[in-house]
Amino acid sequence: MATRVIPPRILRNLRYNTATKPLKAPPTPLSPTLSPSPCLPPPTSAVLRPAATADLNFHDVEKLFSHVRSPALLRSAAVLHATAIEPFVDFGTWLLQSNLVQVPGLRELILATVRSTFYDHFCAGEDAPTAASKIRALNHAGLRGMLVYGVEDALDNDACDRNFRGFLRTIDVSRSLPPSSVSFVIVKITAICPMSLLERMSDLLRWQHKDPSFSLPWKQDCFPIFSESSPLYHTRQKPESLTPEEERDLELAIQRFRELCERCTQANIPLLVDAEHTSVQPAIDYFTYSSAILNNKDDNAIVYGTIQTYLKDAKERMLLTAKAAEKMGIPMGFKLVRGAYMSSETKLAESLGYQSPIHDTIDDTHKCFNECSSFMLEKIANGPGGVVLATHNVESGKLAAAKAHELGIGKVNHKLEFAQLHGMSEALSFGLSNAGFQVSKYMPFGPVETVMPYLLRRAEENRGMLAASGFDRQLMRKELGRRLKAAVF
Image (tube, rainbow, N blue to C red):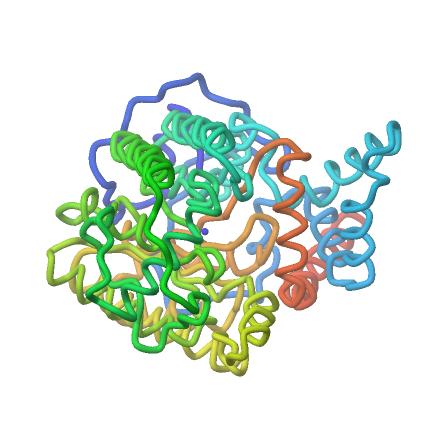
């Protein structure tokens, strides 16, 4: 990768200093205000946000965690410690996928345990109003929220319609909060378009890249989706054209996404499209880029795409898209992430007799992320567009902060956002925020049963990151020790 009430609204104007430029005039709140989360104390006075600096201070743990109450800090340290133990994660994953979850009585016990520990730590709540309350608490601490309705892949139009209504509610709740509280609404194209159709579209788009004479009657204006190094091995033979039924399903999906874009434009909140695995990413990029052409105007990037920099073709694709957008006069926004499908991408490529599309080493991935970040920071410093630097890597955070400061976009700026997952990399989030940058937390919400697949996938995909959370745990232990000494002595 966040709150609203009239008094905090005034405070927020001070906190997010005058360098912040909203997309346009702020919308009128649609719903009553929500009570703040008990985890963070309400603000007692106006706090001026400091001008951004190139240095991130992780030494003053008292300041770093000043907005986090001791019980919440203790629970965070405990949860992160547990998730760093791989056998523990293995057991939890097995348990939640086993038939034991279907046993009456035991099911309630398991879900209650998950809800009060891992779910409560990594998710924002079971419904949008609860998530909004957590965003309010975050906002009091100087952070913002990226709201995401935590649903997984849709298999048919009924599921797409249900998910679509959930995304609409997310936008309405986000709109009811004060300006700048919610930085982005997140949407998953896989939740509003049947997966089978996304796979078919991706096959067709890949074949057209191989053979430019291959006609796609349904295709609208779009930025480049592939580079010369993009993997095309998913499509081994010429695919059949979309059937009339598939074309109708595509039109329905386009209508859903179009309305989400229109609602976000009205709400003055950017819409960020999440990335997925390479088998369906071409279709997702098609939805994103064709909609960006229609909705991103002047200096306002309403529709943002996501670039996964662990892919070997990531930088080349981003440069091609940025160049095409600039040529058309379209402001384009990107979220940069490292990526989350390393294991499955490598297995698929090997099963088809190809090399993995993932960078050969983690250092190559770091290099790609940092180079893409540098390019986008230079681009937004001299023109339209925007970038979200979604990273849990402290070194990448430091490099980007120094680069932004060097380019003169270090102060709070609507074109630049740092982001981390809710419950992860708290030290980096608060460090960047204390240095004067806008920082958001990626906040999935939904009933425990609905979000369970999301949690399982996050646990599997982020094993390395969870195990590497030692930096956060070390700083949390240091602050807890300091508070304990202060209480005793």
